[in-house]
Length: 368
Image (cartoon, rainbow, N blue to C red; front, side):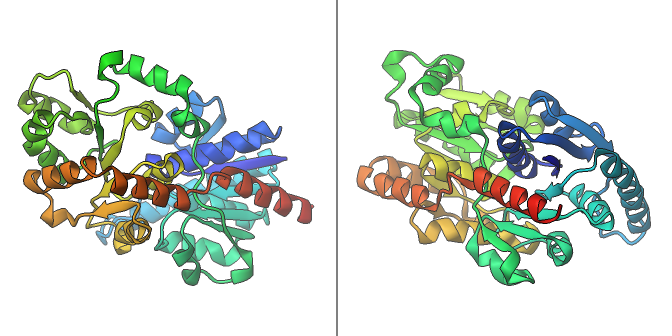
């Protein structure tokens, strides 16, 4: 089978696309990844050795003066995608979100190629709701998103696919690699570890809170792996104490290493990270991004909170004192931590990539 995959802009859209592409490739399928030029997805596709084609794409700005130009760019991208897809002749086109997905899937639909959407969030975005009207299938991460889509018979609750390296993060082999990567000695491996991540751009409120809590957390005997974002790194590095148990990085391409050694994570409530935490049974402190479209991160966090897989803190309430209190309370309560681990694993969908690939192959067969 030939399949087009599209998803871009941020890791939250790219990594699920890569996980689906990995699964399809393992079945012998031929994959073409379509994304933006000089984009994060272009680099990711290269890293995973997938064929890649680029199209013009732009987010839709709310500024009325910019919107005509944005629409023109995406129309040009749709025309480019139409030619690329016609030449490749896929049996199915799969979108995982990001603004590049709309022109690519619209092009596929105009060519009468069946399309699939993977919706990551509990509250879906407008583009996916529109694309779903002509899609052959919609795959969901969270069951509450179902009510926002038409054609209920085309909906599949698959969960969010994670890359194989993330799945392997609980293995002894990968954990050994992680200890070596972070230069953590054998004597230090039992130290409770907090992973702080705000994504590739970092998260200002998370950074401020953890910086304020550095001294208290380190004095309490905890290790901190702080992924602060590339644009914040040098400023935070100047503020950070020199301590062997503080590992400060701008970003971590090998996220599986951070997850392998973490006992607890402080993060935003992006669906991709939550799926990874669930698969690994990692307890989390979630601080939903308050300006996310339709407040979808709060909806994502609510799903985890209801299963006691996460402690949720409002962004406006987060500070160093509260963070220290919550982390200390969790690390000193192994019964609660075990309950959170169980809650996270309950939410995990370990077969998500395989289930989505099954749907794709079924669609391809029925549309021959």
